[in-house]
Length: 131
Image (cartoon, rainbow, N blue to C red; front, side, top):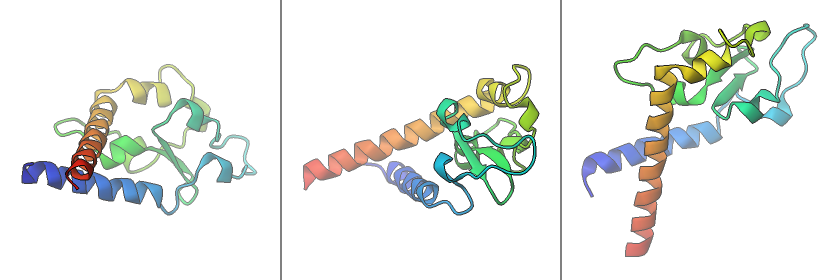
């Protein structure tokens, strides 16, 4: 197996570990309702599997776009660095989560994430069959 593939697999492994133990990010069951009228809704996790929510920033982020950025594509700061806070526009078809999901940056980032996970799984399977 080439060193490049092992490097990618090791990087994905480290990223996935950070994802599982991400500080400041919460799962749907841990999000508390805020006193404001509009806020993040935990049921969004059911429709957007890529979604992360930071209680500290009070913003939503895209896991794939933050950790597997697409080369040569322009990132959306609202989903990668600044965070998405336009709670009123979450379900708008011309803004919000739907527009992000349809974007090239998001699609390529999801592809990079899935390829990395596939490589990780393949290497783990081949290593266990050798042992």
